[in-house]
Amino acid sequence: MRLPGNKILRIRGWALALIFIGMIIMYAGMFFRSTPWLMLIFLILGVIPILLSFVIYFYVGMISARAVRVQCPNCGKHTKILGTVDYCQHCKEPLTLDKDLEGEEFNIDYNVKHRREKLKSQLKKED
Ligand SMILES: [Zn+2]
Image (spheres, rainbow, N blue to C red):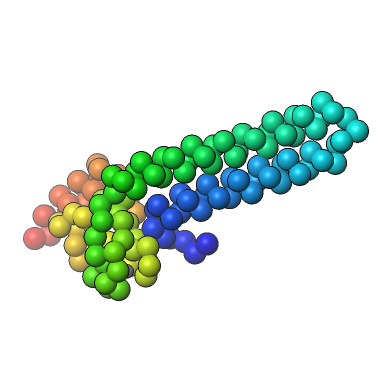
């Protein structure tokens, strides 16, 4: 996966990776068929990341319902913005919901409120 990217897609990517990790751990357990308790431990360990990924998928569903849908000014497609700044899902164009930050250099720090406020006060001083 290319980074940085749209946050929702990135979280989904992690959830998918967790499913694979869980499967690999469970598969590794098959090598210990002769010791049932060890195999059981591997199976349980393998279930944990898979359950975690279901939780993440559920969470993504919730935040994606809350995310703002916008039309990307660069490629014209619809994308979802999470937080104050995010990338377009299609062309990776950096997008912001904060009018004050428009045209400024893109920085993922803007998602943290106090950093954003600090930057804004700096911009005001420059004006
Ligand atoms: Zn775009």
